[in-house]
Amino acid sequence: MERLQETGGPPEAGRPRREGNGGLAMLDLSNITKTFFPGTVNERKALRGVDLHLAPGEFVTVIGSNGAGKSTILNMVSGKLRPDTGSVVIDGTDVTRLADFQRAKYIGRVFQDPMAGTAPTMSIEQNMAMALERGKRRGLALGVTAAKRERFTEELKSLELGLERRLKAKVGLLSGGQRQALSLLMATFSGPKILLLDEHTAALDPQRAALVSRLTAELVERHHLTTLMVTHNMEQALTLGTRLVMMHDGRIILDLDQERKSQMTVADLLHEFEKIKGAQLDDRTMLQ
Ligand SMILES: Nc1ncnc2c1ncn2[C@@H]1O[C@H](COP(=O)(O)OP(=O)(O)OP(=O)(O)O)[C@@H](O)[C@H]1O
Image (tube, rainbow, N blue to C red; front, side):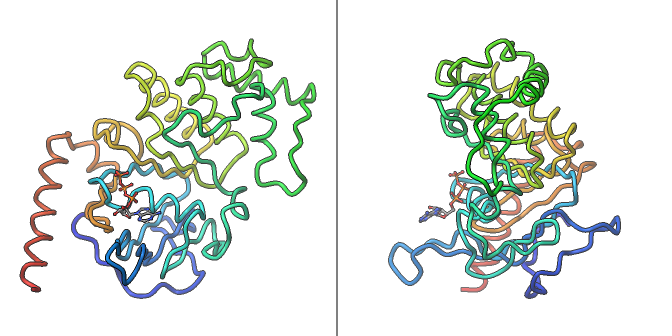
């Protein structure tokens, strides 16, 4: 599927779609709609019928214009928002009606703000211990055992930032890039079913953004993580991931598989965007 995606019929509730390989999809978003402040002057149709199905290990980069609905999609998956219609199914479990804390065990998320994913007054190892307990039933087990410390040291070594020698340092003392790398590690190492990346390199300088991009590719590959990454950086959207989705005005307007994506340049993407957007506007004009 490449062009103007049809919204399709109503989903069969709770029934995960079968992917071409015969396996179950890890993430099924079916016919998701969301309108903010309906029926008022402030009405905003954020999502107008989105279908998106991710196979296990698929890494989808999401680009699109401002207000296209990219963050709203991530919020639908995390449970921060509930759809007006449609369903969210993660690894065969219908989570549409579950609150965000009830699906936390399924999801790892890294935000744009390096300050958002970690607790600044706690040490690196305490932050990591907390991340390990995410979504588990019994409170926050912040105790750091020797076994955990050994694991944290190994995990931190993979970042190649020397953080394994600073386990007891307060996270607030780390640079933005170091903190974002740690957030990424924490979001991935408890084995989430879905990793959500919300412009997670946008606030970093180019060098640190490149580092966090490299770590992202490594961690997603190592843990075979099903990933949705929102970015405004088209080059990054083409370089990272196995599939690229473009959104506009609450819809998915382009969906490129690995092969098509690998043949595209940023200029091609922009051209494609203008072409599809133009076609959409023409269609609407015709309807008026
Ligand atoms: N909590 C909210 N309350 C009201 N309107 C919202 C809310 N969240 C999003 N919207 C609106 O929904 C639409 C989609 O917003 P969203 O943040 O998903 O877009 P986006 O593609 O992530 O945009 P950007 O690239 O600018 O971050 C926009 O019109 C936005 O103003």
